Image (cartoon, rainbow, N blue to C red; front, side):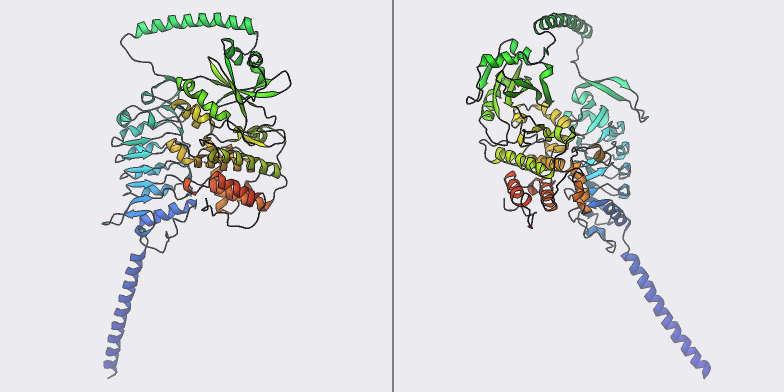
Length: 602
């Protein structure tokens, strides 16, 4: 009987054990099915490398086993592998994780229009299925990885509008399926490869890289030097315009040589004549411009002098009278006999368009009068140049005051300068007819009078002098740190690109640092990237210049809010300058609690 009971008990035990084992197996299988995929782990690594965003990653969670449902992610329906990763224009701040190279099935990667810094990961070369790669409009630095030459399926490669340097790798010539290739607006140097994929791309793919040379941009390379990185491909220096090819090279060379000798002789003769006439003066300056005949145009009687008196003074100007220079020309100090002082901006004639439209445009600019704009009094029209006569402002440029002088601006002075610049720019945008987009707002174009009141200068000149060559030069050489992302990509200026530049100007005044300060560049940032980094950590007040005295915290917070709006990566999110002036007057000059990010009323 006991044996029978024992057998029954054993049977029940085995049944319970089987049930328990079944439950354990089911739970184990369930946990296995809930485990995140390898692609999901990669995405979490990408998320970790990003320190700021607009919230795109809110549903990227470890506990969600299916990354195919995450925002910006598209998977192949058959194997659940990630094929598209779209994260453009989501205000991403951070670097690109090297783990991205493990997305073996990725076909499209769109990270453009953000504030990403650091290098382009060489590991991207492992994504051999990639067909579309968009990284433009960030702050990526370092070299273009040669590993990108492994992406043989690539149709579009756009890494324009970054801060990339070095050469274009020869390995990219293997990308024969490329239909679009864009490396414009960087700091690339050396020879552009001309074989394979590069044969079909013209200069539009390379504009804004002043150190490049090659057939595509009609610039030959000379003075070959070894690559400092030890790369087998040399770096070439000294771009020179490519001469036309023909079958009479020897004849052409002889003609050029003889012509050069004649030109040297003529220059010696002309130089001796000028030296005899002007002594040691600057023979290439205004004195030379007016020596062959010139006329004076005065606006509304603003210059109480005769044309003869002005021309006589212009003939005395030389290099000792230079007080500044920039993208639009050299500036001289013009002192009249009665003690009045003016600023003379000398702009060389470079094309027929300048002659054709200059007088009409200057007439418009001369009619613009405003307290916070530099007054254009008139101009001198000479055969060689245009000489613009402005009011002289003894305080010099804001750039010099912030970065070249030992004296410091206190809080009230900085606020007054910012407000004055805002009012001047607002007048150009909203009250002038026709409205004027400045196109080159920067600290060197904000001048100060004896009371440190600001005046906006050089308005209208960017459009007036714009042609293909000068437009590119201005972007690369003069105003890189101030330019809105969309302007660097398209070259199209709007009121909102001016607003972005004004926002950068505000940050420069607050911090006392140039927009492309070396401390930013070392981290792959500019001043806007630095602000974004501080904002993520709620440390944006640290942007203020430690030498600035009398800072009011309420005004600082309000002004930072204005600047943050102005430098938004999306033009639609930036306020108008009319709105900026209202905010400065109501919130910054007289700070009070308000919802400062609401700009919908404009």
